[in-house]
Image 1: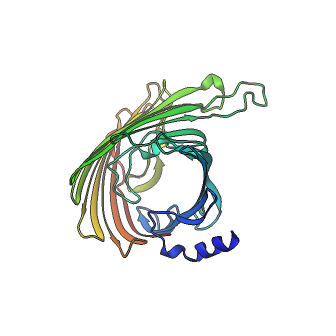
Image 2 (image 1 turned 90 degrees about the horizontal axis):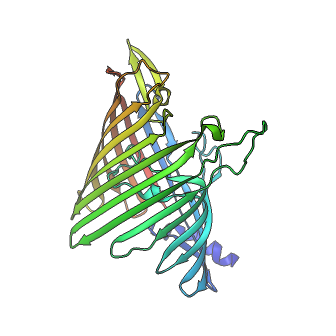
Length: 364
């Protein structure tokens, strides 16, 4: 087995990035490995140009055939950058195991993505787009995803909260559990393609960590895409709301007040409900290159009785993103992406956040 593993690892460069490299396959056990190195050179308003690790990853997957269409599986995803400095820490991003049936779907348990991660169709960007508000990952998840039935498939997740019931003061702690559901449809009719995604999540949160202060946070996203030949167009709508007067987080902006730049996190404004719409389009110019553009509209409203009562009007966002990529081959892609984000709070215009990036991804 050791010789098989070594030979396969040496030959990884010859593997299509869309498929994992099988490094062991014997007696019903299959071991696969895949990954990517993702580097991004980016300039953001009021910050120096920076070189970043944009989620480089190494994934190991084991599958054991147990008969009658069933198999057991285990998956580990390793990341290399945790605190912003490239390669500063190797850590386990996801770790889970479960079962798969060829005609039913997959049921897994562990630290993993939820169904919510797959919801949304309009984000054609590499880094700057995306508005999905459905809970997309957690540390302790039971996840089910069905196989396709006539273009349809469904997903459902249960998210566990903190197992500790009492704190050091013998107060009952919050049970921050939740659930996620999703429905997907994707079908092609010749060169014409149509897709719809919808997802909803509800999870408990508590700012103090106590059960007495628990509240629900809901997330919802729905999107549709129409494609024909080399062209695709999609629209997503996303919504997130906290129960009562509690807050939800919403993006970050750089403020310009009287010529003084302030890096202002929007979380400080205690928004209670946020809504966003994203419109995306892409066109495959050649076999190796495509162009794409996204527009994002956003609106965030405060809870009644917020301590930030001076902010009387909803916050607003308009964002414009465009990019082009080029694939040297099936393993290497480079891209240029620019974005302009415009925020308004209480009728006052905040500084324009401009972002420029050149990226490279090498798959194996």
